[in-house]
Amino acid sequence: MIDIHSHILPKVDHGSSSLEESLRQLKTADRFGVSSIICTPHFYPFKESIDRFLSRRDKAFSELSAANSTDIKLYKGAEVRLTTGLGNNKKIRKLTIENTNYILIEMPSSSWDNMLLNEIINLQSMGLTVIIAHIERYSPIQVQKLEGLDVLAQINAYSLYSPLQALRIHRYNKKNMINFVASDTHIYNYLITYRALKRSRFFLGSLYDQFMVNASKLII
Image (cartoon, rainbow, N blue to C red; front, side):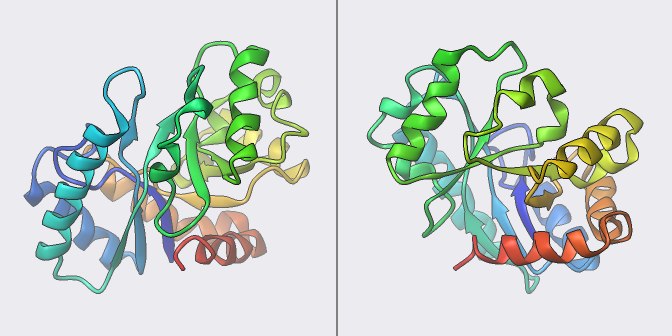
């Protein structure tokens, strides 16, 4: 089982406040059958530079990797907030999932205008493949604006237990817009999220297998 979206690195964002907390998350993930985790702490372009973020992320990644006593393989990534001008940053490629052209993008909760959506096109023009994080959080009106943009999308496994978000997942899947399922784990919900990720195969059926095949392409 591959988890492509997690907040497991210590002291990088609100996902984990210590190495000990991160190790507890890792052991729980291992217990539920996770074999690989892409570490995707939040990156907010309006809060810090890419270089500053990478310095903090890489330090935490090295710390967690050195202390990891499980068989889980860890990979570097980021959950990047889409903002106006993001696609003009020449260093944006450094935020892709390790050794790939895939980039995990978090959309803002506010309305999406054409200027913002053009940033996705700008990223794609750089050869990047955009993955929209937890697409079920966004309304059908918002998601409709993504149609035709050739993006991939990920859902959170625990959203399958929410009537509203499960309905959106069903709706977006009918349009073939969903490609991955992940935990989006944080320290406050890691037991719930990894249990949900394991059980998601029963909700998703054959889709789960396809989502894991898709995920395997991100950890080359």
